[in-house]
Amino acid sequence: MNRLLGWRAPLLSLVVFLLLIGVWHALTLPKSAAQTVNAEYAALVGAEASTGQKSAFPSPRDVGVKILEHLRDPFYDHGPNDKGIGIQLGFSVARVLLGYLLAALVAIPVGFLIGMSPTVYRALDPYIQVLKPISPLAWMPLALFTLKDSSVSAIFVIFICSLWPMLINTAFGVASVRREWLNVARTLEVGPMRTAFRVILPAAAPTIMTGMRISIGIAWLVIVAAEMLVGGTGIGYFVWNEWNNLSITNILTAILAIGLVGMLLDLMLAKLTKLVTFPE
Amino acid sequence: MSEPLIRIEGISKKFTGRDGAVTTVFEDLYFSIEPGEFVCLIGHSGCGKTTILNVLSGLEQSTSGYVFVGGREVSGPSLDRAVIFQSHALMPWLTVMGNIAFAVSSRWPEWSKEKVRAHCQQYIDLVNLTGAEKKRPAELSGGMKQRVGIARALSIQPKMLLMDEPFSALDALTRGVLQEEVLRICAETRQTVFMITHDVDEAILLADKIVLMTNGPHAKVAEIVVNTMPRSRTRHDLHKHPHYYRIRNHLIDFLVDRSKAFAGDTPDYDPRRPPLVTPGLDPAAAAAQAPVPGTPLAVVG
Image (cartoon, rainbow over all chains, first blue to last red; front, top):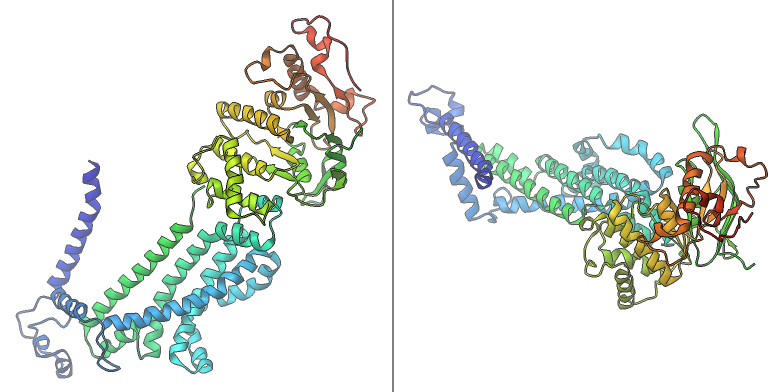
């Protein structure tokens, strides 16, 4: 019975997958009757699509073939406008990690201070409340103007968007450390630094990690948009470039890859969160 | 008389409410604890028992009055006074060994890892937790967690052990076992203990002196009951001793009736010198029970 139950969810997943592919396949089947289309459009999508023998939207088969093609050689580099999807993803992940780590370096110590001191908290709260809801992309022109480098600006945008969840969660985690653990440290005459690292940090670690998990999710969302703006390299640029090439298959492949990498990043953070979380 | 280990002189605690009204939880508390003594404090909830313990530990400050430890005034928490918390307060990210080692390395920062380990092991063995060193608190039962709390407190070899209803969250069987162990450990180490409880039997089993508090607000020390039963008492033969019911009846009588209107029924009461009473030796109390011939009359004022 239990074994049967264990198989039900994956089975249902498979059914949903087949259903999606089936509907997609049905919708992209070639139509028999010849259609008249705009000549310019015909030139763009090719003779087969323009006459209706082939759908303009790629079929699952087309995308599957494209994915295999990308998987066979993900790291080729044929000049600035033709790089493998692996290289593009690598650029994006590197930017995200750099901006994200810089944000962690700032957010965790500052969040610690805010959490420890109600005065600092009250003093900085208005700034946080105003800066937090600003779309990270709104910073882009300012970053481009001041930093004068598109790649650095993209990293700055990642930095600014990962900052807030980490900062707020760290402050909250530190402020809500159980009173009795602090009392244990006090009765043992533990110094402030030792209390911070041996009691408060491990006690707040699960909350801090939750903030870091939210941040990596947001950072991965933002990088695609940021790279579409700054161009050059990265998966966001790849998507935009393929739109200009009108290669829907490549765009679909990239969308799938973005989802998978985002999932992997989230899984990694979830694993790390588990490592620092201890039930009572 | 030599200086007691702990001397409490007229401490009080006042809280100011939201509406500005001042509530005096307790005031004019005077009592002392001699080295090697086991003192229990009993009172109804609301008389500020936990606050008294926090003042003794230095975690909280009294509104007025002084607490002296070994003749020196308490100014804050100290390694001299270890606290066993009601909710054990173990750190869930540390193992049993880790929790105790945190205390030991705080007490003796200069010790090597091996020395800290060996010292911790000694106290893990003392509370019968051998074999559970690598377990985390979540894997332990309530009784085992409290054993770790006891080991952590004892491991820093404090002058004074402060316990805040340490067994109240445990089931009756576990509580009995732990009470006996505390009795054994205190007999072995001659540890001075101040414990808060609301369990009359627990107090009679463990304490040499039982401090009775009147009801709050304005709680005071009503009297101090001397446990006249021998220190070799155990949970099994406790109730067979002739003094047991006299002391028990006296305590219950106090908690049920006298704690409410204490000031009313004792006109010559002075909170600076709460009366020291020995109901265990009192023939009047004995009259209700089987009479014991030849018991001397000894009510010390």
